[in-house]
Image (tube, rainbow, N blue to C red):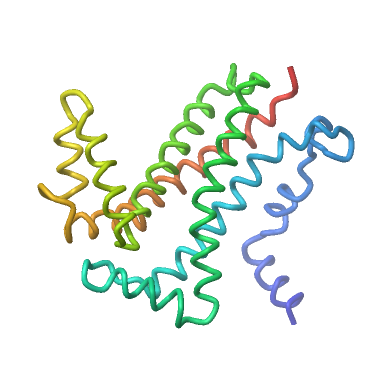
Length: 223
C-alpha cells in the first residue's frame, strides 16, 4: 500500500531525485568516525541539532498544558508534572535539554574555531552560527521564567537588571522585555510569546540558512 502511494506521489511530484540527492551525499573521510577517532568532534553540530529537535517536540507537548498567566502558570506546570501521564519525563527532557543544547553548541563552536572552519569561504556561516548561539541563549532566558516559581521570578529580575545596564539602550530593552516597570503578568505573557513564537521562527530560518551553506560549501577539512 505504501509503495503504491509513494509511486502515485512520485509520478506527480518527482520526489525520488530530491531525497536521493540527500541520501547519496558522500560524507568526507575526515568526519567519518569509522576512519578517524578524532572525527567524533565533527558530530557536535549534529548532536546539537538532534537535541534542538527534541526541545521543539517536547516544547510543543508542554504548550498543550501550559497556561501563560500569573495565576495559573505555576499550577499548570505542577499539574503537568504530577498528573499528566509521562509529563514529568517530557518536562525533564525539556528542562535538561535546555542546558545540554547550550553545552553542545559551545563544544561545536570550539570545534569550528580550533579547526579554522570559520575562515573563507565560510565566514557567513560562522556569523549565522553565532546568531543561532545567541538565539539559543535567548530561548533559555525566556523559558526560565515560564514555570513562575520563586527561582524563575528572581532569576528573571536579575536578568532584567543586567539588560538594563546596557549603555544607552538598556532601559528600552528592559521595558520592552518586562512590558512595564515590574516583572509581572505582562512580562510572563511577553516571555511566552518570545519563547514560543518569535525566537523559534528566527531559529528555524537561521538553521535553514546554516544547513544550506553547509551543503553548498561542504564540511571543512582539518587544519
